[in-house]
Length: 297
Image (cartoon, rainbow, N blue to C red):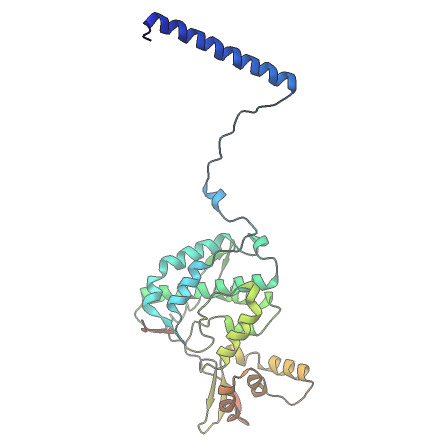
């Protein structure tokens, strides 16, 4: 049926009155029954702070893991992948500047997680320094007055590789295996481990790292020349007496040597080689401060 404009106005007015009546009736019913109908609240806007991990979640080490998988070679660091990894290194350093055992303690509830943090931070900082030297210099050695002297904000405070090294060793209650996990930054000494260190796997990882380190010519060298020497990198040479004392205490024996300690950790493949050094004098492996880099792609 066709309606005139006037009829439409009457119909519209009636509808409005009906709606108003229902709304008022509903309000009276709500008041009588005690029901509460709060106004809907708008969803909060997500900001950068609300998207950050909560305090108890583990830190994101993925950038460091990617860098390590790219740059760590058998006994050196791949130079070209290291240069290309600068954005990842910078992003990881920025993350560590705000997160750590002091600034976000709930993420690091035990000594294992804190030790792993300091090892990772140390190795990352040394890679950052090494990358900077590769970019700024063409020489194959560290600058003599500034080797490992860079400073970065880590966990809210200014750190160097030396202070992070001390924190890793101290937090582990002087576990000597931690020294083998700390990249030396030289051509001698512990090599760069190709994976991140995890607190919940720390003991297993340190065993694996230590066995690999003691089998490396960067750490232990047998010199069959005229001097007949067993050469130890400076990190291992400095603590040999402690290792021997611990060995004697554990095995209830006397007269042990650092060779006994090395044989305890040796693989069957390396044990015969080490036994060839029986009776050799122990000396420190000469420091090799050349950049530990290679052009291996």
